Image (cartoon, rainbow, N blue to C red):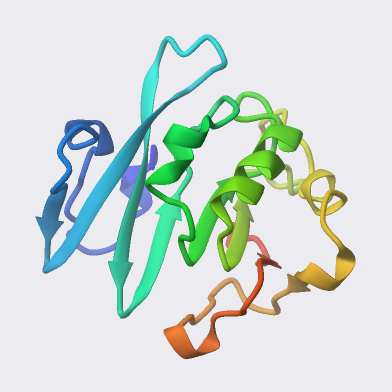
Length: 168
């Protein structure tokens, strides 16, 4: 989200803050994008967004730079999303226990942790194990590839955490 130079090809750039208050969202290449306004910190002083969309019958939400516990009203728009891309490294984003509470409110079918310490980045983040410790080990899958194919027929019935190896 903050390193556009790494995107290959000629991507369309959407800013979720431009359509958080538009129930119809925006359309790009036939896909309707919507966004929930949230905040970068518990002080709720810097607005950010959690964009979400449905493609191929699978709904996906990116937690953006969520920096606080979600309220039930903030969670409503993305409740029961199929795939939740979750910032899982703690401050400067949401605290790990608050993220787990958000996941419990949202009830996604798949949680993909991201933005956590992996030893390859120069950020003071917590390891993904902090989040994983809050789940039953039977709910956790360590996927062998940094790519995951998801379709309506492959979605689990209950929430699963799928940890992908770092792409960088």
